[in-house]
Image (cartoon, helix red, strand yellow):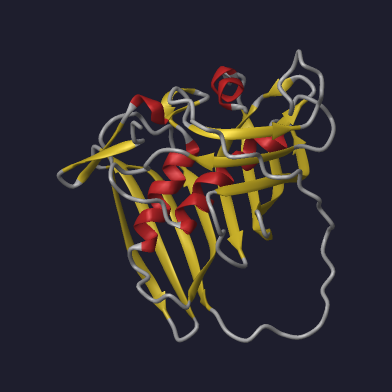
Length: 265
């Protein structure tokens, strides 16, 4: 299956399948995945948990050669902070900051949290459609004439990455989560009229890494005013909750849902 990007010397070259739903630019999941990949290369210890990743998309990322670098900002006994940058032709187009925390003893007691029940994960298809960037099963409105999230009610998704982010590299659990959380924006920002908000940045928080290829999202909140929006979602693997996603978005009326519709199972 065609990968999202291929290596060329020190650069990564996107393939057309890496386009997002806003035109011939890189999808947010590819941008976030590549930044997470660069971050992860600076964390050799297995007992450090990626607890937060914030991705800022500073300008639309063209489907042209790009370079991603990362550096450790601070390394302590119980944490590590890492920054990553994506450039094209020497210009900064996206960046990320990540925080790793050292795993340890879990405190006793019961904790309050919002109760969320995900739909069951989909049955693994016999084959995947090579024309779409990922496999995604959406849940929401039963109105067959609209995209399932185009309603004022609960929305869910199970998704599975089906191709390499970088040719020949197996996706790590952290990179899978970093790619999946980009869906928070469309999941939480759809209205009864469609999707008219585009990601400016998004944050992934994880209490543990996902197990297995499927990651689920459940919409929690959407707040917007004067064309500025924030939305949050809970993230799951097939064993239960793993963290949260938060999207900050700005109004944009150029979304083309055809790719999302064709990707839906």
